[in-house]
Length: 259
Image 1 (cartoon, rainbow, N blue to C red):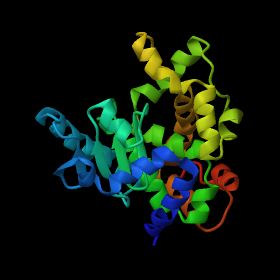
Image 2: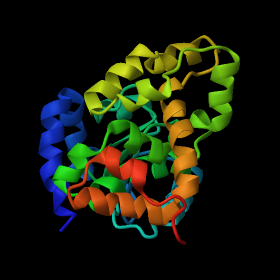
Image 3: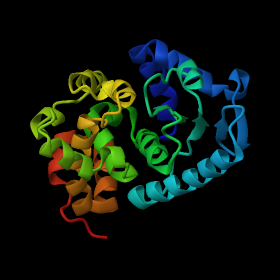
């Protein structure tokens, strides 16, 4: 029954997201728009070399291991679409991103062809699959992103990157500021406010990339997940589905949880 929630959520997300998400809708007919299958649920841009294809297959397997470890099982089974050029990425509405998810369709940029970013986007798909519509709407964006960051272990969003931001006094949200980011729109506004969307320019200048917002979300969630583990995460999901508020659930979910 939870799987049907994505069918309802997808039109809602389209209405909120505009043009890039409409382009992302092309992923629901990948071969019609030039992508080719290389395995079950994996599509790539034509011309992708064999080494990259092998790397991608292995990355999907490793990402599923991470999802099963965090959630106890994998209920979402997203379809992966990999671009090896920026032109391909832009054609599916992914300009400037490392990876993104549209419902149960994951789009990867040339920089996101690894298990870290597959696991990150898979976590979003997993969360939306497990939540009812009402529960999904109550879950704040910062929590969804923080769980995805913690599960994916991407170096770009790591605790080491957080320490780099602190050491160099680079602008980053406080815990209260982060937890005020309830909606996707608020999250995207914060991406711009903390200049996380300026990394293409930083790369062109040979500068270190800045991922203040995602690093902050991971920094906030790692202790919670380490304490609660899979039982706590699943308990939070179940309690949200039963109608409880997020804050009450987040604060009172067992600590530590029985394994």
